[in-house]
Length: 364
Length: 193
Image (cartoon, rainbow over all chains, first blue to last red; front, side, top):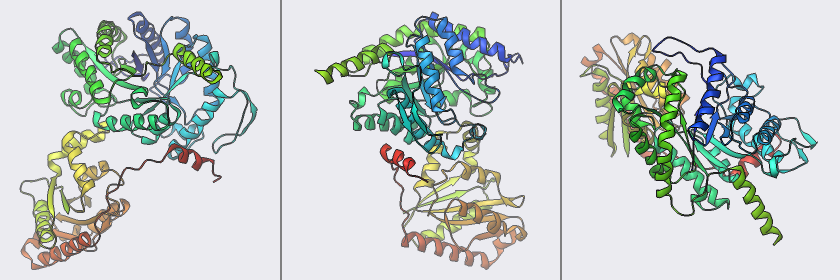
């Protein structure tokens, strides 16, 4: 099982000091946070993608390439790669390039994006969000698997005799997660391809995601990729820890109360009860995270949102130290509970091995 | 059959609830219904939180499910500033936009003066038409003076008769979540528009 962090990349004022970081400070902070993730023993750093203020990560592969050069083990991923408004040809090229530079430590998460004006800014229509996600990904999938592609679709200039370069490292494309908050169509898409399904469950109650993930598992099996338990499931989480739980609540409350997403709405207490947010001691975070398995089954990737709501870099780094302390416990506890036959978390090495096995199987 | 009553009255007791109750009694006399009353006042904070976070807290989720599963709906609001109340609109803003499709709805409103009565026709009826509900031809408005008039009882009976008849005649089809297989989603895109 993989543990990591994902960042939205928002520039938000610290409500306790009134200080707003500059874009440069925020970008550098994201890099520092990613390096810290490797240092404390996490497996994954994932960045969001946005094309409007107050968000900085418009160019994920630039940032991830820089982080790749400064890390050894960390898997570099995205918390969303906009499959609707990016050209799938450019995604194929950018992420294959990153895959080579990072020696395979790359995967990515497809998302549609929910900011209305971004679609027209990139020449698209938000009402076509699902068809765009389906067609663009079909092309991306083909570009990474066929050396020469002839292609015609509804949304993009046709291609004749096109080869996307560089070809994926070792002939194995980066693993793809499909992220969705509410659309069964995307769970179905992930299942069809045998890709991963990431349920970004951090803002909503679990019942909703139990339905989506069950659908994905069932359809994954239907399409012949393995048993429902062998499907690849990723989940989000959101935590704030201090040794003493009362200190955590006291320190985090002003950030919660003013957070861009849920601030000025429900109380911290109601929100922690209704969503995966945990504010408390490291043990409380361990206990709550282990309940995810009870709701959704054994899963492969757990990403926490740590740098948000205007929390200063120093605090985020302290949080990552604490996360680094509990992750070994989580690894052990999840490992002990894990049912036999569950899929391992996807890595480049595992995918290469799988490809070699299936090739050997074909020739034997 | 399930009759769900949504009342946006704010005071306790409220004349909006009083009107809703009279309509409910009149429908119950004509059709075999189980009644669930949803007082929006009790859900006001939940509704605001849903607008902010995008998901309903448990009590509101339960109310929304009841509306979705209803065979018929009575929707009653006070008229504020020439229209339905903000709370009433906010509730229907968080109801799934397909939840009322084909559902029989009786609309009713209260106000201090009869001059506001056409808000039912100019504001409330179009809102439910937009949601593809089947709105009863008779909408019931009660101004203060109507509580001393036999006309109100007559309109209550007529509107309740319309709702009961439609509920009995055409049970609402309950929508199943359908999944379009991926091949079909892909194939639909490959067809030339």
